[in-house]
Image 1: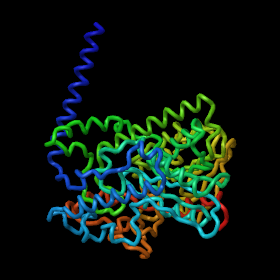
Image 2: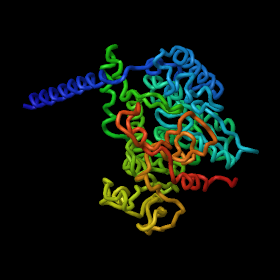
Image 3: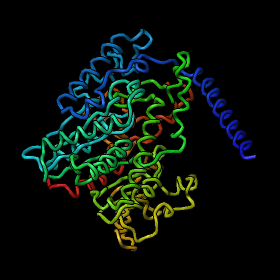
Image 4: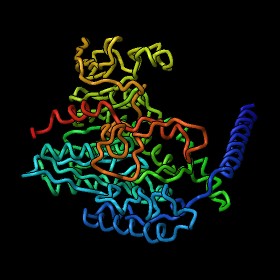
Length: 481
């Protein structure tokens, strides 16, 4: 009887997989064709080489990879790809080779005078070092050396993510920290800032440093929308890429094939990218539990996390249950940006029945400080800061000189690191730089199928109207300017 049940379950599973793969093949064949940036994979430094390489060697390998893209992709583009909307076309306004500084590359920002500390900045998946440039400048202005490293597979072509593994990113993180400590030795403070996938890498490094005495321990972690947990579907992303082993179905290696008009971020998304992120978060969650059982989490540095309540990329609840609920009282804080719950959007919000989203956090008192940035008086657009200190139950409220823009109902996963004045992602670019396009300032109004990309891609909030608050909070523990 048991054997019969097992066989039936196996048959159902196999049938489901066959149907899924069949639907996948049908779906991808209808999509756009692959471009050279989807098929050419530039050479990156191997994981073994990363373990012993220094910063100069990493930059040399990075320069070689970018030069390969110039030779094998840009110089060999077919006529139909030589268009203004293609970032890999030398004549495009978005071609990064024309900019004064190519933010796809790793960088070091040096402060004026003797350094007061050092910070390593880890960008997100499909992203580039550009995404944390404003936070890097904040640290530099406070006297820190700021090191922004380009993760392997990023900053070149989307195909670079089809073969990379998450442990390559972790080794690159360790390399960047080695360089940080070479430039600014202990006991000067070492901070690590991680954004999205980079947040997972920052946490993973900090946990590894608890067990490996050869790794420099950070004195503080700052996490922006960290990838502590992702959707369950991402665990099975690899299955979607199975048909790609057959050459005619090579497009199956991609979850999305989109025009590449962003000079500092991939729009197309390979299956392997999702799979590696999922593997990283699963390893991270297991590592957190191991260190908790061993009583080692008390040795972690204080963690300051900023997270939007609305996030379609990472799990907000996993940040609480998978990390903060497990932390001892070590000075950590979780800052949550609530939705815009004014009368204009209120009736349309999915969780409008839970105005404070109180179910997200465990009951107070808690081991960590929690901060809500939320609407205040219903008759005013001004925001308030609602703080519950670690070990306390009382909530303290402070008015803020900040407002939700009238046309914004929430922050987004991608918006937190960017001020509204950012040249690429800001709602109100300050005009000091020109990267060929101002994605965040586009007001998407018009007829369907007129643009080469869907409305949803352009309507997602790209910058953070509360960035001044984020910068203020990060700067609280830094030396005075």
